[in-house]
Length: 117
Image 1 (cartoon, one colour):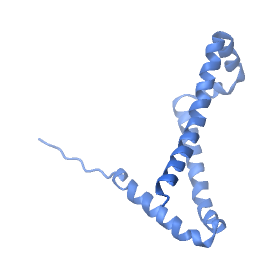
Image 2 (image 1 turned 180 degrees about the vertical axis):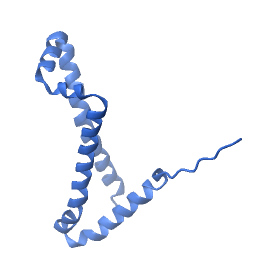
Image 3 (image 1 turned 120 degrees about the vertical axis):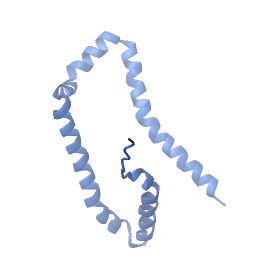
């Protein structure tokens, strides 16, 4: 006996939805950045509220002890235990965070230079 399960996935439509949003943004650009920003403010506010609510829900659902990581005592203990390696790992974290920003800037600049005529 074979059972077929039907499901709906938005992953097939992500690119189309993204292109539609970008087209709408470029069309609305002529009205000025203040109007575009004003129209997107409620969307972004709802997005951040939902991300925060999801995070709070998951903290309480899975393990509240993760909030202990906020205590600065743990980072001091980490640096005392690991010395130079702790500084190297911290540097790695900063490189990961800032590297993403730099990669985006480099990709943007490369795209701009490629499309110049």
